[in-house]
Length: 155
Image (tube, rainbow, N blue to C red; front, side):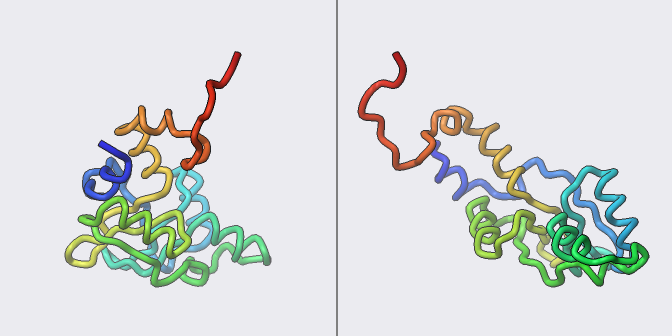
C-alpha cells in the first residue's frame, strides 16, 4: 500500500492518540504553562466541559507571553487562540494534513459527532503513524521526491 493510499483511506479515529490535556478558560496562565511542562505536551485545549473554546500552544507562549511581561495569574483565555481549526474523528489522515497545512498549525483538535472534544492530532503523531505502518516506504524515500538516481552511489 502506498503512502497516498494510506493517508486517503485511514481514519484519524484509528490512530493511537494520547488524551488531550484540557484546561478551564479561567485557569491561570502560569498554572497552564506548568501543566504543559509536567505533562510534556506542546499544547492544551481550553474547554468548558466538553466544549472547545480555544487552544494554547508553545507558539502562543513564544508570540504572546515572552514578548511582554505577563502576570502569571492572568487567565489563559487572554492568550489562547480562540476558534481553532478542527476536524472530525472520521476524517482521513489526508484531510487532517490538508487542514493543518491550510490553517498553518501543528496541532488540530478532534471533535466527535456531537461537536465535543474527542482528541488532538499533531504533526508528530502523523509522522509516527507513517513510520510505524509504512517503514519501507519512508526509509527508502529520496531526500527530494522527484529525485531520480542515474548512477549508483558510493564506491
